[in-house]
Image (cartoon, rainbow, N blue to C red; front, top):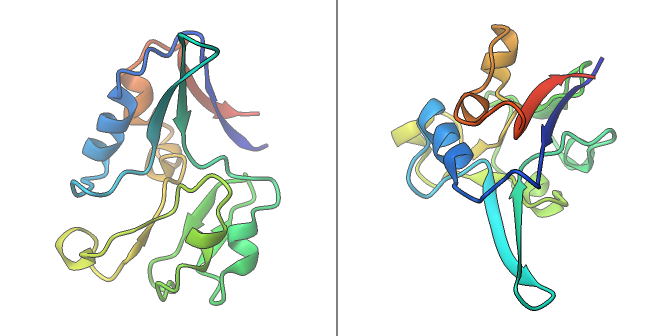
Length: 148
């Protein structure tokens, strides 16, 4: 079984509630976000909205390029960072195809001993069999997280 997050793009209105809920749930500093919403216009006046977050790739390149093995993939597909092993070299940041890896320049204020941060399918919520905050903020037909 692999975890997955489904976002219904036809229902997303770009309200940023998922971004704010994630920041609140994980006590992220003002300049750090683990997910973002990209809004642009295409085909004249057609507004496009795309939430961007870690896709927990089947064969994640970030795991492959990590020199210390701090970036790991669990058996259920969740990609995560072990803060005790991470040296902050940013190899995974430079190689993430979705540009969702974030380096916290002031880790002592928010994440003692940890400089690299990343969205991890709300690993804490998954381990406690709960829904992540960004899903609670939306109607279930917009965002859903479940095992496939």
